[in-house]
Image (cartoon, rainbow, N blue to C red; front, side, top):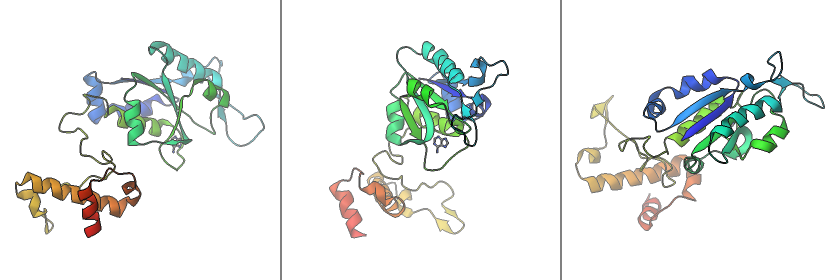
Length: 240
Ligand code: ADE
């Protein structure tokens, strides 16, 4: 899968995506990305990419021309029509389900906005998906873009090793993940739950499922409404 990220701050993207699991996936050729500097496409002789808003008001607006030309250079290289995501607090809230959906694409273009916004006309021409990463306002779309690239990449087959793969992780079946423990057995007078040392895999699985259920009820009760619950799960929840 290839990500094209249209941005005024390519170094911000590269600094984050070059590291850790995503950096390794790039080295292994499972995914690739290109941070495309919108400023490289401006036809303005002073390299300007923004201007005052028609109708007045504070701040500047990113102009259509450099964004469109940057987008076209990416779209030309992708084969076929390519989904184009604009990161904006006005978008649909990003989710694990959306990450999985985007991971089915061959290519994805992400547009990072800045200043007071982007000329509406270029958005109308190129954007297929408006995505927000939460109900707060950031100074630009770069952090949201790397959040989306990270979450989508780990859903691309082969990016995670079997050990890292997300079978039992949070949100997989609509529940939060159970707590994890590693050595030592006792730390700061806190012992690891004895059942995890019992060697009884069935009991361990049951205990983890209960922990997932209780934790979800405590921290994200809203998720229980749509989680996939078995009859046994419902019994556990009624008991406690
Ligand atoms: N740009 C600024 N804030 C944002 C947010 N919360 N999500 C996506 N893009 C943004």
